[in-house]
Length: 392
Image (cartoon, rainbow, N blue to C red):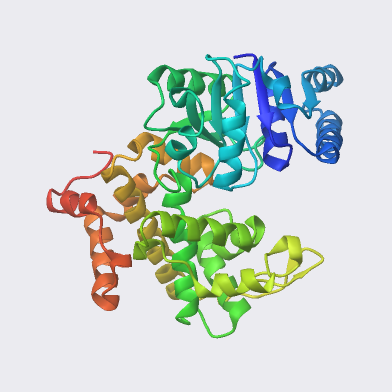
């Protein structure tokens, strides 16, 4: 697949175009807005210039990447594509119009993919003339830097389309994992407790009563004690509260309002207030010239309690993802370590803590709260009874 069409010239679409062009593919980037295409081209040139300055690529490589990309404003210009990747706004009705329109313009062998992070791939496939040729290919932002790509076949997707898509993305130098068409796929599903349990701990005042001190304390526990690169509140401010909240709300709704994915009023209010994080200068933290001034309460015992609670909830979500055959154990471990840079795989972590200890911790939370949010995965419970481990 050497002729690639990218629909949408925003941050994600431009990033995917860069990845494909760097691997030697001929890429056409489509957008209805000429100014968006001009900006995409300008930004890519700036990125490549910096890579040349840092001696990451040569001047010749920069020129070849730019020569591989063409910017177009007509969908028919994509008619010779072997693979199309859509990266536009997360709106089902808009995507339906797009895929219906594409149906009359592409060859019967072209693979059509969506980069959606939260919508049903099977539903999107139903909008295209040959649903067997449709698949989900979910990159992470920034696409040029993040190694992981989730591949999500719809229930209609032909097996060869899955194999060819995965091979193509691997040829672009990416690590691929395959996920069942389930809300959130792997990463956005398994990672929910990292944010939601941190918010729950904050709302209960377990890390202090001053908001920014509480956020900083929880972030300190997750970085210094648990070993994550970013704490949950720093990360939500980096992603954008508006974006993170929208994903949480989408996963909650898509799982028929399962309490495990219930959004937080704290995050909802911040989103409504326009406190979206770094991009607005204020989120969980107030940013003074990009820096955070909040001080954490560095209490080792409190930090361990916070870290253990969030980690065990992540382990429980990963175990349930495996239990429901959403992805393989290997792919879940890869997704969380390479997709969101967790310090170790959650199944490896579970073995280190002890499966029985994880079950006891989750059961203790359930006994205290009596909420389904804290129900233990049947897989963990069965393993504890059998005294087994994930890597035995």
